[in-house]
Each structure stands twice: as C-alpha cells, then as structure tokens.
Image 1: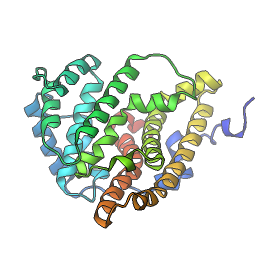
Image 2: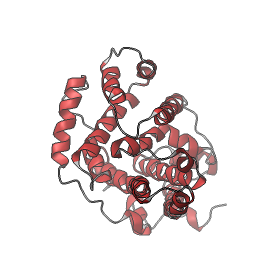
Image 3: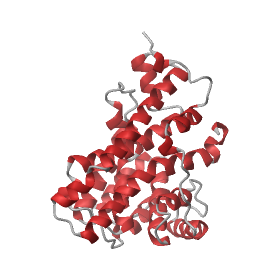
Length: 295
C-alpha cells in the first residue's frame, strides 16, 4: 500500500524537488579562485601519466568547490585523485595491478603509473593507517562493481557507499595535510559523519543517473518513476539532516580526547569538507554535459 511519500512531487523533476525541500543543498558552493589553474595542472599531470591530455570528468570543478578556501595544492591533489579514480572505475580489470603497485610492485599500465605517482608521493595525513583504509575501500569498490545484483533497500546504503567509492572521502586527510587521530576517527560520531556524507553524495548520483537506490526501491518496494524518486529524495533529505546533526557531535569528541586548539581546528576542517562534498558533488553532476538535460 502506497503512502503520501510515494506520490509524485507535483510533476517536479527530482533535483528541483530535492533542492526546494533541502535548504542545505540550495546554497551554492563557492568556487576556487584558481579553478582553471587547477585544471591546467591536472591536464599536464594526466598527460604525463599516460591517461590522456584532456580529462573529461571535470574533476577540477568538483575539487575547486570542496577545497575552495584552500590554496591550489589541496584542490589540485584531490582533482588528480578524482581523475585517476574515474579512469579506474571504467577499467575494473586494472584493480589487481593497482593493488600490486600499492604493495611495492613496479607500475606498468598508465593507470598503475598514475597511481604510483599519487601513492608514493610523501603526503602529510597519509600514514600507514590511512593507506590501509584506502586499500580496504578500494577493494570494497571493486567487489561492489563486480556484483550485479540489486540489493534490498535495507542493504543498499553500505553497498552503495562501496560502489560509489567511499575511499575517496579518505582523501580529504592527505589533501589537507591532516591526519585525524585514530581514537577520533574510530568514534561513533566521526563514523556517522563520514558515512552520512558518503550516502548523500552516492544517492544524489543515483537520483540524476536513475540507478542505484532508485533501482533498489523499485525492486524491493514496488515503487516506480516519480514515486521511487520521491522515496529516495525523502531518504536523502533525512540523511543530510543526520549528517549535520552528527557533525555537531564531533567537537565534544575532540575535547574528550584532549586535542589542543590547533589540532581541533584542523580536524574540524576535515569535518567541514565532509559537509561540503554532497552539495559540491550535486552541483558538479548537474553542470556536467552528461546530466545537463536534467536541469
């Protein structure tokens, strides 16, 4: 039996209804003042790594929003990782070679060479713990991409984060040069922030791509078309509110673990990046040529 939440939102397209109902997603993200400098640097790096001279994913636009208040270094590094990750997602067979490079093997294919350049460059915030988490997330994405089943809605969030690439959220630390202390990172509030940020970004992608959570809702709940879109929009709206609620619980954790002013401020900046990523990602999706017809 369908409820009020399952009715089409008065003919509105998914992202318009979404934006109207969620104030946190309607405020435009500031753009980095050196966006095109970042783009040029990423294109040069991509060409040298053998990935091509003109990356088409527009990673500099997303990175420029996430790190708008930083120098060009963090945004450029993030854009390089995003460019590499987009190529890897299109070539699942390359995962094994990448993992071998991470273990110390010599890179061969362009994807491996690009990864080696990113992986072996000393970066504050990318210690052994970070590398282990990154590789775990990479393996989880590989498994999710190979799994073609449609999971029930109850199982989808964790699987959706894995397929989307939850390891990309771990890049905030090395890009900002901040290593979050293990006790903080392993706390329930921190995990809640990281997971909620990943969910919102992944579900925004599902809304504009017409896949993922929408498919899961259709199969599991018997919802279709606008009814399925409305259901996912409801989930995204609630998840974004949970993200902001979780973020407000992090400062007491920092105080409880005795972080000083400087360390607390650095860790808080990582939290702010988690808050920014969903809106930045949605804006990037809607401006890209692939989804322009949804505007």
